[in-house]
Image 1 (cartoon, one colour):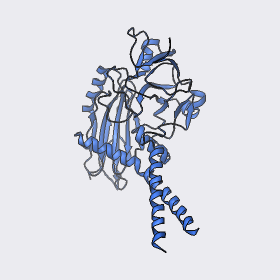
Image 2: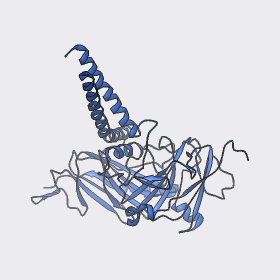
Image 3: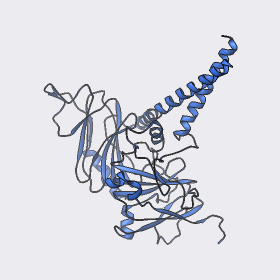
Image 4: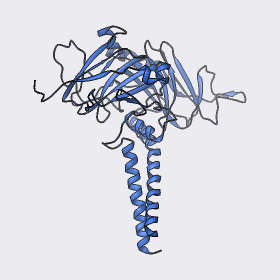
Length: 180
Length: 207
């Protein structure tokens, strides 16, 4: 009898452990897989890339919106803080940042106005004891590890999509040099 | 402790591990069956979850979003409703035609997109993947009621806007509301009137 009680307890404990562990690792595993796929497609770190117009043939993520123009930047803070910015758009537009666990840590409005953010490692704030990474008016947000920045702009036609895609040249996603 | 007992307990650990992993994958929507997005907010069978994109999301929502809605925005920027059934409660499927009807939403911009059972745009060349505020405004005027059909092939006259379900199999519709009003976030059930989805006909119907 005791043997079977132990059997049930071990089964339940193992069940809970593996259940929670699997759930815990799913988001970061999927995000890591997405980062790997983007790297395999030649998308470099710390650089904006305009995605092709979303169609059944070009979709690379689940549930893309065919009415939006996307630009994506995969970044990490290994080389220091990262400055991310994008020009405004006539119509709905947003600049968002996601961490390695898929949390939407930041989103800013691009409707008719440009926006930007300085992401810095928590142990290296942009201004500390009189030093700073860079003089910037952008919002500064503590961030660690790697992540993905995404620009969305309403672009329901090919012409609007092309117009939005060209704005990637005016967007910034790059490491910021330490400037003591 | 006998060798037999050790084997039995090891079996218990393995069984628990297998069941725990499979159940997590199932609930997270990583298996062909199981839930997808939505559930916490439900209005006329359109379901959503306000914790999408938020660090407050529980591990189940977080895992499902990673699988079925990666890079989704937090609710202050966008809310996402999905619907898998018509007004009669039947699953949405390629073999049937539907009429989707609604009115202006309390948001800056909106769209309704069709996705197949694998959360992908259906593989067709119809270039009719969604219906959005821009189309509604052009066809029906701003602030007015609008409608569009969902069917696997056009009728040829294009008098009614339509979205293609060709090669979608069983599908769902996703309603995106960008920059929703604060009232919608606070009281979605009393603020949002989601679209109706009426089944028009199905292949094999006797006419």
